[in-house]
Image 1 (tube, helix red, strand yellow):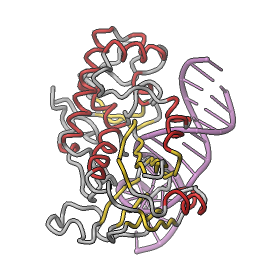
Image 2 (cartoon, chains in turn cyan, orange, purple):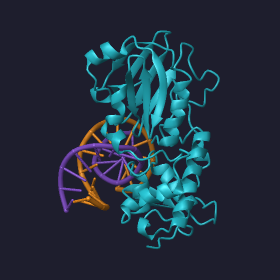
Image 3 (cartoon, protein in one colour):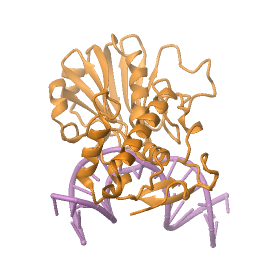
Image 4 (spheres, protein in one colour):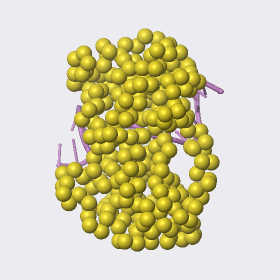
Length: 290
DNA sequence: CACTTGACCTGTCCGC
DNA sequence: TGCGGACAGGTCAAGT
């Protein structure tokens, strides 16, 4: 379940590992994971030097010197793990979810000129890698529709309110998960920020005051920043560019904590279904008031 | 148009 | 122990 903090953590890891390397080989075992033609790969990827690694919303972009970009969406179970000539994890044997790559969930393998590899692993095959001309990346449907980055300085509480109110009649959680309203929020940080703001996830946007929205804005930015600081959340599959887990789940207040005590009031945390997703709330702190 | 549901997939967990 | 079914949850397409 890579959301903004997980993808940002992978980006930071890869940006310290990939630039300067030259791609010398690419293999994939599942066409939907990397739908480009062999001709594209041969012309624009093979032999290309890596320039930069960027992120927009939950999408990673690896820019190549050929003016092409590898655009990557990890969806739920995707991983991008770099393995140097000297195997990672030697000093951290218990910190990795991936001991030996490639493995049965490896969909795409990139080989570099110094003998290192980058593996796109994806158990459920929902994720994808696409090779596109760099100037075309902003024109793909997802990029045209996606909302602003919530951690940008220019993104204000007022902007947040304006965008949320485009969907006044929807429940706030469904709206937070809508990538066209705000970029990068998924199930974990929706639940965590709504708990922080003491808002029930099914509360209709139209029944939220600006004051409440401003609190939610602060809580959302708080949890996203904290999660980046902790290297993201490893619920099941997520690992960073070095194959290591994130530790935000140690700090989670409600997510996957059903049956445990609310850290604010001690009431037992409940799990339900809101907006079609497993949803975690404190029934005392987050009353539904529509 | 606004909103909800189903499809895409595989692995894990739970009850029988 | 084996087996079926529910569940995990990001995004797009299809349905209401």
